[in-house]
Length: 340
Image (cartoon, rainbow, N blue to C red; front, side, top):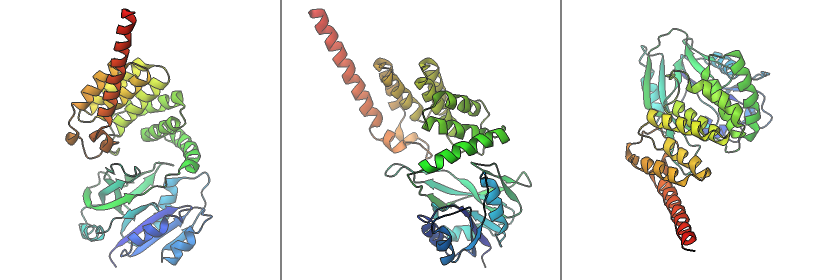
């Protein structure tokens, strides 16, 4: 017995669950709490030796499901993991060593998002290893783990890594997420992160004005230490994009520049500002922004970075060259017009 239970909540994850459960071999217990699968998820989980339970929650509540699953854990320590994730090889040793420190009630472990296939990964430490009875899940969707006895001592265990390999087709879940996020915002208006996520759902639907109202709620709040690095700046960039698409380009540029000031070592705010200027045919302004963007050395960018691989290579340079070529053609045509 090594004192760790892995805990999953699942629904129709037959495509991924075998990979996840295999990565957890060596732990005392694996709890799989199924919330209504109609595929082979339950059969695969039982076949691989998991402790399987089943429930139905309608309308769905992620925190409730996670707390129910946690109650089935037999061990003091819990590793919360999803079916489309896996514990990286070599992580088990550091994990088992860390839980011998009883003064710490939870650990941030490495979390690597592999959503951008072929692009850069994003490393973002998350608290998903914790002691049962000292932490609880809260919120209907985009749930958060909260300490029952704050302030809690949280350690860092970055040599232990969970890899996220999401299904690229999430269209079926987006409609559900929209409804759940609306409920979550109504139930917990103080949970500003839910407003952010609701705004992003509207961005995906290109409902710019709806997105603006919810993203504004998030960017106006103080930085939440529980948020991942760059999330506030990312929200501000999305707000700026929505403002531009809704026709308020001046305010959009103000938000992009504020994001650039908040993250001076990042190219993203400036690059995406230039994209909106190009869309508006303001090529001279776009050139100035891209030149400012390229003054930020790519090797100075923080590790947690969106689109960093593309921006570290030649994306901004390519767009700058295109703008300069277009401007040169415009100037040449003007000269020809004057000569004629």
